[in-house]
Length: 500
Image (cartoon, rainbow, N blue to C red):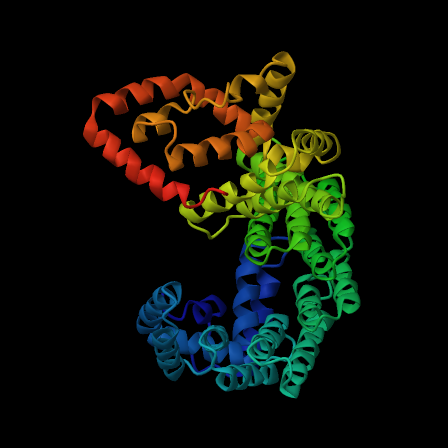
């Protein structure tokens, strides 16, 4: 019903302020709060609106253009949801033409200007709002946000950045003066100091946010989480865990809320893992571990969070161990290279599969150039002293241990592969390819076998397998002339890389 508030007070639309007041008191005597509380409430709301000049103007405008304004605001809301700020601004400005005193519309317009990074328009809008409504806290908060957002687009070297942050804090303080129980402006001030890397001041204001309403409960989670971020930025990782404990204390017994908190910590952890992997930064990975451990604390049944936390924990441990291993004189250089390669690979190496395989083969070649006793001693030391690095290379070390065990079981192992009476009958494939044990290639491969492969544990492991398949391969080469040509080509190429 149009102009319903006027009808409630039984006055005409053109009623003067004095007529509105007299009508109100007359009706209150008839419908007192004690006798008719519901009717009194309706009368009181009508009087509060019509007795305030600005509120009355807003109400009259809405009644006059109600349908059109509703349509415009609905369209503006849709554009805002689409983040089409330019079109939303146009619709809101049109609305203000129809209802110039609609401060709530002007407030939305200011927010759209902020989102659209039209800083001058945004600050002018909130200057108007706070001047005409100095006692409305939300307008001061949004005024502060406009300056805060503006500051974040200015380079650190530009003095205007600091000035914008200071102005933002002044606006937030005005909001605090009006609503000291509201934690949001306290947090906003903390965030401005965090942006300026003033961690002491940032912590001070974040703590003030927690005590703003006089109690500590889940409503303070955002402030506590901000404190975690401040500790992270100031490299006080142990305080992140301590703050997570504070969050646990104020959490209600609600599984959905615990999952929400876990997800928030995990999200930061994921981002830190990406940064740590990209820049190979162990400190960033330690920070990621702190956040993922907190996430696991809040949601211990989340398999994905648990798995990632365990993987990061192992990787951080491997990084810590590598700082010691790289200077350990009892570990051969090949194993040190292998440890570094596996750590980088676990972080997500950008090398192609072919390049990774080439690197591994090169590292293994370096390892096998060392004597058996040194290789086995290094492997045992890594297993006992550097378990995280050992686990990153568990498959390789397992093969190495198996080969070492076979050596212990078969003391005659090495003699099996020594040439008997200088014969080359045991060079099955090469002899079958070239047709004579006296060919230069046969001699070269025999020399490589006896002087290099047979002296190392992995080399002897290869010889052991070769003696199982060599005779069969040689018989096939002898039967097929084309295969003999192919093998001659391949072995000839490889022989160039063998030592003389």
